[in-house]
Length: 586
Image (cartoon, rainbow, N blue to C red; front, side, top):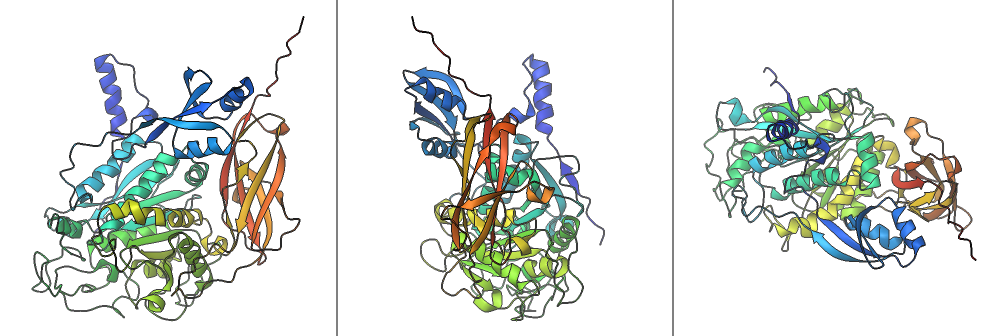
């Protein structure tokens, strides 16, 4: 089958704004200042900050916050988000929320269904809107076509978005890159509604936090995030046809095999299509499938027979190096890069390879450690599919690990019962439960992409705290960090939780991270020695030799096994030295 041409959409909105400004005689608008569309615009706070002394005002102004040109008595005003609010409070400022600036939602969302879930069309529009609003951070790539579109019917292009601080050559369809890649995909099973919504929120978290959150900013400076919010758009379009009683279509829309129910309302769930998560070209058709064409786990007539799966596998090979040997027992090297999470629902599980056998994968130690690091955040049961659920074959995570060596995982999002259980839970479960539970897990997976099998064996470092976020040049600043090796999921039913080890070292890098040849600065344990699984360490930085401006501090910890965990970033602002004027007295 000939490959579908791949197209990259760039920012046409900026050009349109420029043309309009010239025609109307308005000042041109810089693309970086484009206001994000309503769906992705962040909520901002105007914070009233009490500064009762000149020293307090100077400290606020030196902090690098967005201090507005407004004053009321002893109060100054800062605009920012909840992160800024927490930073100010942590620095001892007395503050209150003066105003909340919320984007006005559209009066209606006619394409949404089931009380809020976005349609395929809305997901496509969202991707294009993100690129238009953040041209320096995002590109959309069309990597194939859905089954219906290949048949000349009303199908869809298959789209992914790449998010990073764009440099020349970034987001290229080539595995030869020095920016490790994290890949998040959703809705390969069409009826699993919440998964695409989590992908939407992940996209917005990344672009909205760049420049405001030090950890996410460092992440996008040094990594690429790839997201496919709807892997199976034809199937999702069938689900949408049910409106507020969504059809439970799982598979794609290939209707050439079997006398299957259309629409998918058959009580025995005998539906049309191929299960794309059984169609991958790895251990295809060996276990956990049914070769009855109308069955939910029908794997197709051959491996990667479906255009959605074939295009996805081509995309994987364009983004990730083949880092594992051809034999089933070959181990991917410790230097392997790349992580992948495929979102499914439901069962509250973090699954790691292998899915098709009880035999441990060659990289089981690293895979299992990373799985348990992620389940610390969502508290899901952790293990392989056979250990915690059942065996499956031809699945995405087995393919990307087995074929390319990528550290790959499946999240089954949502409880088995209760108000937020099922494939179609109430929409408010997304923000009320699923997103806050999984945000930290996705961030950890993304931060581990540089060397997942190595860093997952090391401890977690929490965001460092500074004695002051902004200092005058030459002023000392204390950097303190909590390093914890015990941050591993521990939910009953999990299998193979790694042993916890004492912390052995903590180190800091200024601006240049360890993988780029930065110079380490050791932090010392506050209790006098590294001998427990959770340690607080600190060091005092002399800023005399540091340039003016904002600096990124990278901190990481090591455990007794000699394993370094992923870095965590914080910012330090170095300003001109502040001298109090000497006032002569008469």
